[in-house]
Image 1: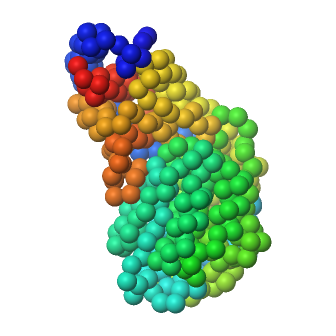
Image 2: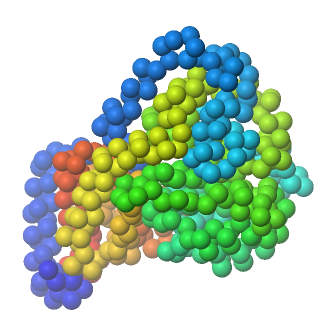
Image 3: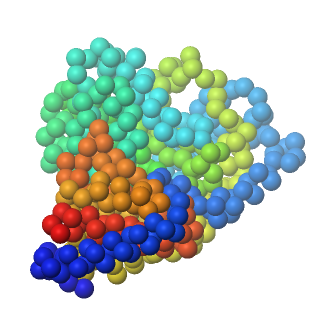
Length: 424
C-alpha cells in the first residue's frame, strides 16, 4: 500500500471509489455495534457473578466484630479499607470506602470544595471570582464534565509520553485561581500512558499559588494490565507528604472493572487531616455506604495478591480484543500514513490521532454504517478538540467477532475521511 499523500489525484480517486463500494456493502449488513464506552464485556461479567453466591451464613455478615447490616462505620468497613490500602499501597486509615462509583466520590469532593471549601481553602470556591482547572488532554470526558458543571474555567494541558506536560503545569499553578488538576496516572484514559517517575515526582512537589490546590488522582486502572506482568506504581500520598504537600492530593479507585461496574465498591484516599475535614462534612450527608457489599467484596477479593489473580483472568479476555484493534490498524492504516496510535499494555482504551480535521467525519461515517463510538472531541475540555483529530476506541464490550467487524468499518471510514481531506 502507498501512503495516501504520495498518491496521484487519479490514484486517490480510484481508491476512494473502491472504499465507497466497500462502505455500501458494510452498511448493507445492518450492523448495530457499540464501542462508545469502556464497559466490561459479558464474559467478564459472567466471570465474577459468583460473587453473589457469598454471604450465605449469619457469620458472613460480621466483619471485625461489626454487623455489616446495621448503621455506622461512615469511613467503610475496616476490612474494606485494608483491602484498598493493600491495592493502592497507602495506609488503611487514609482510605474512605464508598458505593459502586468512584465518579460519585470525585463529584462530591469538588462539590464540597465548592459549597464549603477544602481543608486549606480561604473561602468556599463558590465565593471565588474565578476557578480554573487543569485538564490533561486527551483525557476523560466525565472528569471534564464534573468541573465544567460547576462553572470552572477548564484549561487543556498537553499530554506527553510521560504524562501531563509538567512545564505547563508548573507554570499554570502560579495563578492562584488554578485550583486543581485531573490525573489518570496509570494507563491514562484514553492514551494508556503510565506517568513517568519524573512526572509523578514533579506533581507531588508542586508549589501552587492556591493554598487549596488539589490533585485529583484517579487511579482507575491501577491493576488493569492486559499484556505483560503487573506494573508496580508509587504511592502518591506518601510522595506528596515527603514533598511537604500532605494535603494536596485525593486518590480514587474502584472495583468497577474488577468485579461489577453496577455493583462494586469505590474509595478515596487522602491525608488524615483531609479525612477529618471530609468526615465532618459527610456527617450531614450519609451514615454509611453499603457495608454488605463492602463485606461481599472483602470476602471475594481477599487481598491484592488474590485480586491480581482475578485480573489475569480479565486480561485473558481483554488482551485478544486489544490485539484485534491494534492488528487491524497496523495492517489497514499504518502503511497509509493517515493516523498514529499507541499500543497500550493496560487500561480500557486505544487512543488514535487521525489526520487533523477528520475525526468528526470518520465517526459520522461509522454511525452511518452501524458502529457507535465515543464522540469526536470528547477527550478534550468542553468537547472541543482543536485539531479534530483524537478518536477514543473502546474495545472492551463487543466479543472479538463483533470487534473485527467494527474495526473493518472503522478502517474504511478513517480512510474515506482522509481521502476527502486530501481532496478526491
